[in-house]
Amino acid sequence: MRLRYVFLIGFFMVLAMAWHAGASETAEAVMEKVEERYDCESLSADFKQISVFAEMDIEDTAHGKVMFKRPDKVRWEYKSPYPQLLISDGDSLWIYKPEENQVIVGKAEALMGKGNSASFMADIFSLQKNFIIETADSRKKEGYYVLRLEPKEKVQQLAVAYLFVSRKTYIIEELETETAFGEVTRFTFENIKFNADIAAAKFEFDIPIDADIIAMDPLSQ
Image 1 (cartoon, helix red, strand yellow):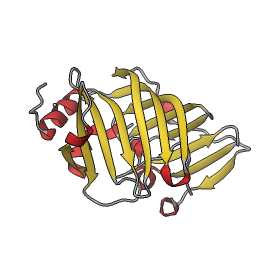
Image 2 (cartoon, one colour):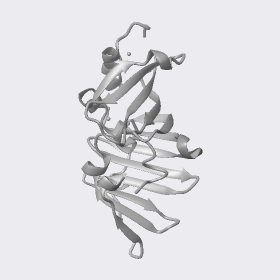
Image 3 (cartoon, rainbow, N blue to C red):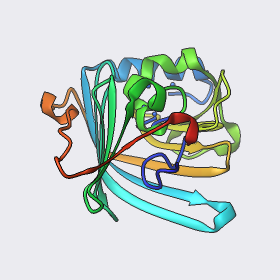
Image 4 (spheres, helix red, strand yellow):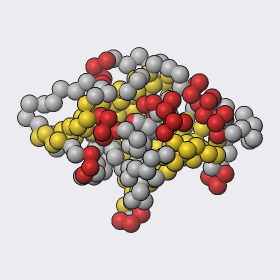
């Protein structure tokens, strides 16, 4: 099963996405400063997502708000083009499509670990453990350190990811992921707030009584 507006990537959605000023800084040095910057209890940001399916000549654009709370709580609110929620309390995962009155449910560890963009930025501190991180000289962008991340364990959901880190603030302002199927998703983050005041209820979900419930098998993605 493909989730067109949430799992259009691979691990983020760097968003899930897990928590350096000279051109000579190593990837390790940059990541250490990123980890220092993201050493907070919670985070919220506005995001824009562009997903490209080259083989089908399809490009999708979405906007919304994302929230993270350590160690493993995630909430993605898609506001356009279609409202959608992806919520995880660290144990369970719910994907709610209100226009279809449909809820997809599954285990967070199986569906969001090691490769899904939805959880990429939920645990910045695991990136160096789970990824080979190098500077991406071929992807240079003025004002940014660009880091290339390749999973140490191969997964279909993510072949490679690129982090665009501000040279001034060491904040991840852009994320690009590519799946083993060649699907590319680009995220840009704005209005980033560290230690944001986020209510615990934001990471809980009560399934509507009349909703169509689909149990998600991670092996079917």
